[in-house]
Amino acid sequence: MADPAAAIPATLEAAVLAAVPGNATLRLGVAVSGGSDSMALMQVAAGVARQRRWDLQAVTVDHALRAEAADEAAMVGQVARSLGLEHAVLRWSHGAIGGNLQDQARRARYELLADWAARQSISTVLLGHTADDQAETLLMGLARGAGLEGLCGMRPAWRQGGAVFARPFLDVPRADLRAFLQARGVGWVDDPSNSNPKFTRVRARQVLKALQGLAITPAQLAGTARHLARAQSALESAAAEACAALCQIRAGAVVVERDGFAATEPELARRIVLAALRWISGAEYAPRAASVARFQEAMTKGRSATLWGCRLRRRGDQLWITREAAALGGACPATEIWDGRWRMEGPFAPGQTIAALGPAGLARCPAWRDTGLSRDALVVSPAIWYDDLLIAAPLAGFSEGWKARIVAGEALFPVSH
Image (cartoon, rainbow, N blue to C red; front, side):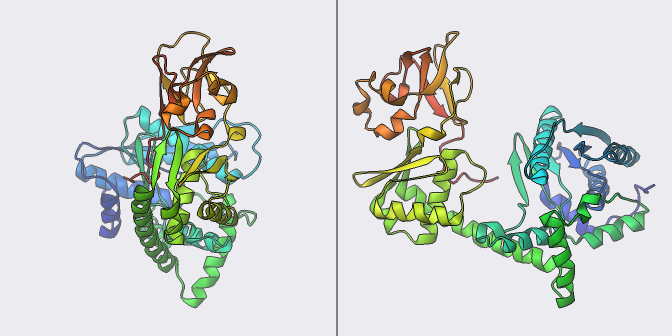
């Protein structure tokens, strides 16, 4: 069993401190799978928490995919308690899983962790990804021919729900962490999926071992990913400035000045296109590069196009990118979020629903032309219905005490924390 008083390398302590906001009253979480990376992180974080008097809790996600997972979670709990930490186990309840298993498990894991952090009033959750993970991610991006965005590796931090997820050890090789654990007499478990070649990451791991014969190390590749991320950040800042000059958001549509867009440097213009498509569609991932290029060309030439649940139409010297009617969500109760984007506020009554205004609804709004909004934007805007009776269409000049607002915020390039 570990000796909590054993020395912790200063570099590891510094990495954890750098990943955590400077607040003396922090409540933190550390996600621990039982693997070497997260076990080392728990050891280091526990030592730093004692020094800083942080409230640190450990948590393990049991994906319910292997019979051994419950025993591994129990082992983590035993080590956590020896370090004076509370430990929780979160179980993923699922049925049959189709498609990309690792991607679905990853999504479920972060949703469970975010919900747990919210219940515990935890501000930051620490994750044990290493320079090896970063290097593997870079190689996977190269394998699929990714652009700059796909070669930046894992994010050091991001916000999900009310918590920040942080990866303090992205510059630390896995071998260093294992040496640290061995010096402390702390063991770990190896998930057999980490050696299954059917997974892309495992194949990237095998390639990474081969590259070390050329003196290409995980730390070097992680550094390359870090440099690319800085370049990506600079381009995003430039694209955000161009977007602010050329674009505005109106009734859930992105309105772009056509001539200015056509004169914009192509890479910055591409980023504006991507931001608009993802903001309107709500998609986590971007469309294929070739499809984006065709959409961008249509914008430059002022032609109509559709992509990713979005529709492009020219209107005078403006380009309107709206939600595509065929991609809209169905009707939902008026108190819920509609199409993943819209919340309605007004004199709710039982039986009322939110659905698209549509052409028939727009015909019942004689003042819609006075709004200055395009017809394409209005027919896909939210309206309040009671069966076939139109109650309100606030964006089409028929408010009746109702307001519509975008829940995702009105920024194509939101400022990250």
